[in-house]
Every structure is written in C-alpha cells, then in structure tokens.
Image (cartoon, rainbow, N blue to C red; front, side, top):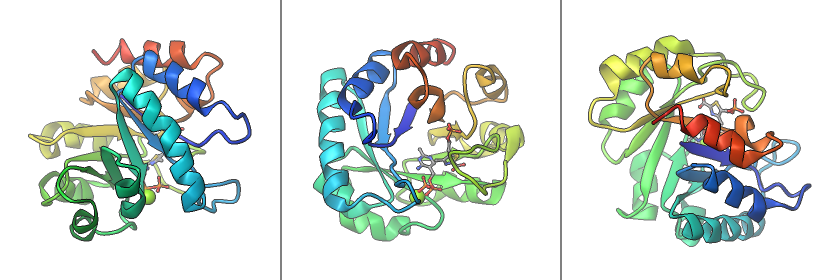
Length: 206
Ligand SMILES: Cc1ncc(COP(=O)(O)OP(=O)(O)O)c(N)n1
Ligand SMILES: Cc1nc(C(=O)O)sc1CCOP(=O)(O)O
Ligand SMILES: [Mg+2]
C-alpha cells in the first residue's frame, strides 16, 4: 500500500502522522505537496519534510518516494521517484538518479498503461484516477476498466497500483477488478485515526 501525503505544514504533525500511517501498514510513503495554490514547495522545504519522512521510513522499514523531481530524489536519498506523463521523461530521470532508485510512472489510459508496462527504466506504474477525486482536480476518471485492463493485459511482470478516489468504501471493487496494490491520499491523510484507516485498507489487500 502506497500513501501520498503533503508536508502537513498547517498541522505540524508530519512525523506523528507518518509513524501512524506506517504502523498501520503503509509500505511506501511519497511526499506530494503541491502547495496551497498548486505552487510546489521550495526545494529546501521539500528536503526538510523528506528528512522527517525518511526517518519514519527507517523506523518502520518502509520506502521513501519523491514526486516529480529527480534532483530532489537524489539529494534526499529516496528509494523511489514518481513521474507523471508531463514530468521528466524516464530516460532522462534515470540519468539523474542512477540505477538504485525505483522509478514509477502515472498512466491514465490503456495506451499509456501498455507503454509503462514495457518502457525501459520503469519499475512500476499507476492507473488512474479510478474515480474522480478532489486531490487531482480536472482529471477525468479512467474507471475500473483501466484497472481491469492492467490486471488482464498490462501488468504482467511489472508491479502496478490503482489510484484515485480509493477508500474503505470502494477498495473491494478495486480488488475485485484485479488490483493487488493501491495508492491513496485522503483515505489516510484526512482520517481522524490514520493508523486505523491504514490498517483497515491494508488488511483487505492481503
Ligand atoms: C504513486 C503516484 N501515482 C500517481 C501520481 C500522480 O502523478 P502525476 O500525474 O505526475 O501528478 P502529480 O502527483 O504530480 O500532481 C503520483 N504523484 N504518485
Ligand atoms: C495524485 C493522484 N494521481 C492520480 C492519477 O490518476 O494519476 S489520482 C491522484 C489523487 C489520489 O488522491 P485520493 O486518494 O485522495 O483520491
Ligand atoms: Mg507529477
């Protein structure tokens, strides 16, 4: 199970939150902070938040992921770099981060999913959004059809995750469509008890 979180600057509880989510069963945690107006964090702020997450990952044996920026992934000694369709191409990102960092790719339709399933340098891909979500406004839903496609055609041999609008109320549908791994944001970041929320999702993925 893969969690994307912002830096929780307003709440000031990033370390406690990460500990709770990881204790609940999150395996990979990504810092994804687009800022209040969609403006990304300054690199120094991003590195500071990543340090907090890195310490939590060490405590729980989890993986640390960086969104979008290959230079920051390298500087933070992250395990994973996640790239969308409009981010740095995988080939160029690979030159920056080397071979030790796993690279993930977002996909939003069957063509992109098939490409990510075979593209050199990609270690995993995500399909989504499964449902429209306020976390990614303006992005049309790819639906459970894309999950089914990845399960039946695209995923073989390469790990993939379903993302977008997934929570405890609909996780069973995603699993029934063939997903074995999911990425969530609000289902854990907005939970009153992030540990319990993570555990409730995790137990249904086993
Ligand atoms: C694990 C994971 N999956 C998908 C995304 C989305 O990436 P992208 O399409 O580049 O959009 P932004 O997150 O950058 O807004 C992700 N970040 N992580
Ligand atoms: C960051 C992101 N990427 C998506 C994609 O489809 O690539 S959907 C998404 C947001 C997922 O947030 P929530 O779990 O709160 O719906
Ligand atoms: Mg991106």
